[in-house]
Length: 435
Ligand SMILES: [Fe+2]
Image (cartoon, rainbow, N blue to C red; front, top):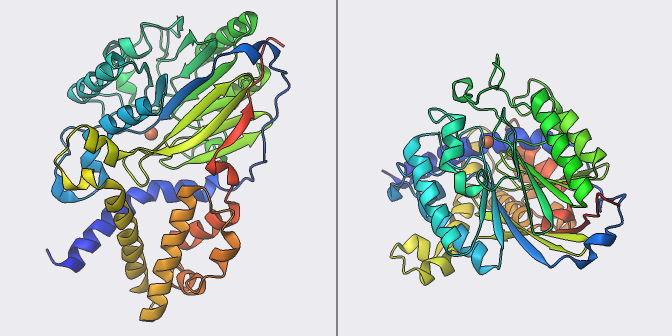
């Protein structure tokens, strides 16, 4: 394969993988994010809580059948990256890890078996795991089978399970984890006794599930426990509130109101394959990114007293590879490899777009530098503070001329316009629902 064809193929693959992200960004970046969430609770009883570190990862898309390393993308390292994630979370002192859905890339039994084996090892090594289903996790595996694969990762420990969905709640470390099944998977996988027949596979919360969730929240209030809620699909991004968009959870607005009514400070989600923070009327939503793309990140939550600190983190694949004696050259130098991949991605995109919107070679170089800088700044959480410098770059004007008519043009403008300092990390009052 020639270098040009290889790049085009790589670009096509990555562009394809980016379509979801692009479409979603167009909508999700529409709303401004206030500087700090507010809580009506004072957190008095929580002042004595021991510090607790929770890791949150999402969209692992594990697929043991897709490991052909010649493809040269993060996706083919899916098996290793899950190992590296679990290792890194443990190294970081996480006392548990939440996996917010799309655990595997299509609900085949052998994929769940492969993941469950890795999770069992993590638990043996002292990292409890709690999982949720995403839209890629069921069919052919049904709901009942899913709960049995992950019996040790939430379902057996649950203090309550919703009888009509895969939602459950767990009480531990002075905290309630309200783990919500947002569905969105094939109708054929819905096999729990009592689950109502559905006409579409759009994500939803049923009436019974909302009632069950309110029962859990009432219980938490009576016990004076703060609640962290999690689900695969999102609640606060603009597109998630547009019925028919494919991103909107039916009754998601009612669940959001329920969270606010019980002063739940945080909802954790994934699905969009990008990092995001939304705050609205006392509720914060953190979107954790796709594991199999730049920057192979996850979220760390540090609870201490009445506060919660969010910090995004990159999996240190290089350190994991060294600690576990990996032979693969990419894994041993993953950070550099991924950085080079990001640069190649920038080159490919400019090259592709300039075929329709020609710019000079010098302008191309500048446009590549601009695109690469924006991507780096976004993922490092510094885009908002670098905004002025980025807008003054020589590649700014040629990039947008070259990107005319492509989603990238709109997307980068919105990224720069709406960049939030919260993407670098922030502290939140988590309060006390009993107050
Ligand atoms: Fe998903």
